[in-house]
Image (cartoon, rainbow, N blue to C red; front, side):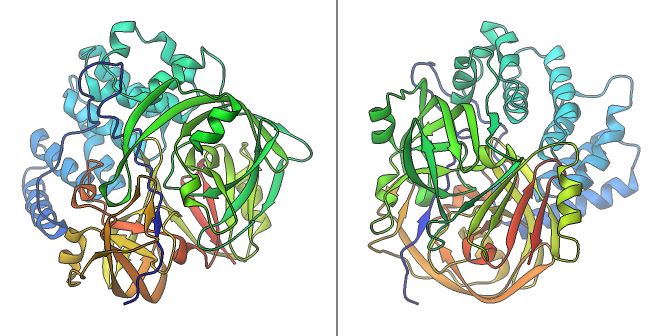
Length: 464
């Protein structure tokens, strides 16, 4: 197959903060690595655990192991059902409490996650994963001020550049929205392919920005940041497509305007984005999940626009009422780390897979997968080569190949006769998040719909 220019803007930045310059020492991963092997091996182990659990449902250790394996397989709701009874006893184990805390976080129940992570810390004040989970809970709920309440000695145990960034806000609320008119705004795409691009304004300067849900915060080009006097307060080495690494800065900007809404006190990442420019369209930034999270956000591909609606108590129901009869599918999604949007999908008839929904894969491929997934579903590993124009957030120079896809699904949506990309997803990405991620579904699948991210209900709504 002919390789098209491909950009994989997978900004794996906060979770992989394994070393923060100036912080000293190595960072702490959010969870331990999993065993080797592909999903088929895990499913055999899970089936054995299920049989054992059904034989001894009152055995707490057996139930916990069953719940843990359910989590590793991506069956988060079922895992929560199994672990919850373990919390009702007089002295639940710290491991079960922490497992439940992780699940609450993935499901967007941040109040419960905060309570459970705090319970773990009450028993073990230096528990690094519970500390990281609590900080990320504050991050998702825009309560940066709560980080100031963490004792200084606890802060040192969290090797997360986001914490340094959140502390730099000194108690000020991030993402304060100022609307110029109503409580929604439409921003036309400057370009739709190979990725959608919109115009944003920062400090009076208009720049073109890609939309990429694989990115965390708003990413500003490092040269532009320097010209505007925006300096980093923390930095780290991030991992990107093809296993490439690059230094990322973290900074705070006074404002960012997107159409008819201006966000004040905005956290940002700093990374060279100009190399991702599309012809004469210079790319000065990337709109990531951190920005989209502040709104009821719609990437309306058929109408070439980004629609941002205010998040409020009634915004979800109003949206659904407005589009009654036009909803093609609603797909539950989960959020891991700072920005990893995950949802269940299928590949060539293999169902109940877990995909990273990352809109930043450009070019012909609709999907990218590591070697473990191809082995599991029986797709031959394609030949790979380094091609000019293949670029990720960490640069180019990594080898890629393509494979044919008979059927690719997200929820109950399904498309046929697509192309997959191999090489951008290193083998380590398969279990990096503490559970199996079977692949990355992206732009050429999503662009058939108007795609709305509802972070209040943790649902993706696809309309036509």
